[in-house]
Image (tube, rainbow, N blue to C red):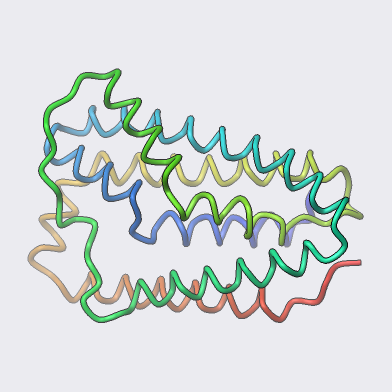
Length: 211
């Protein structure tokens, strides 16, 4: 079982990433606004299945990698820190695009909504990096089986991401209207998220290798 600090740290990373605009958020918001909250929730089901796929693939892959390659932990740690810093820059850079600037989408049935959510998540580079470069930083080989820790941490990420995205999908129209008339709030959100992600990146970069 991962230590409490690892659970809290990974939960914060997961929350920071899900709140950072990306393909999943943009698709779910656009779908919810153009076709209604129910369509957004169905699409979210596909996104959730994509999370499960990544979790299982990464859990077994990370287990083998950390046991076979002595310096894999350090390589993944630095790659993860660099990616978090890039996300921080994307949050605060001038001209950053709001996910609530929706794209017009055609009206689709439940099967296609679910499938599109699944494919969107599979092609999402944020989720690939989360599982391949960030999740290993919170695994301690001395705290128990690596596979079990990976599954526990992955389940936390899925629970956080699905919960946050569900709330966003249900409230997408209201949030878009609110931010459309108060751009300063969007700027505050971007800088706050950029600061949190940058702090996590620095912590990860300078963290000592676990025994």
